[in-house]
Image 1: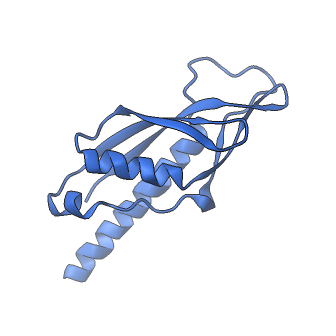
Image 2: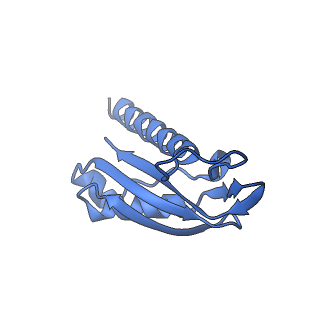
Image 3: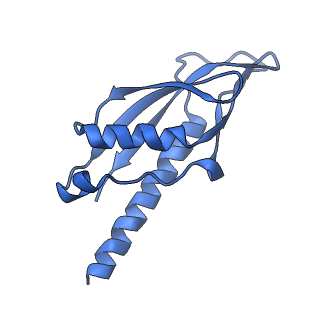
Length: 127
């Protein structure tokens, strides 16, 4: 029975990871439509490691959603990230930051040239 619970938790975390990565790949922080010839930053999905659920958060049964804003530089590297909405649990917020740092990105472009751009991602932590 314990094996089934662990398998279920692993599937939820995997689903959470894929949802977070998909959001990162598709969501831009800009409120306006991008000009013609512009693109948004893109995450290399294969490069994003599965987030590690912090042991102390798991033991305390902490769950929640961390909303991160992140800046992808013109070089495609993560230049900055910040918590827009906390999960309410610092360990989960930090784990989301750490997971995001492991992703590789393609920069946004404007008029065919790479530019820095902000995007958003939600990390949903559930047991």
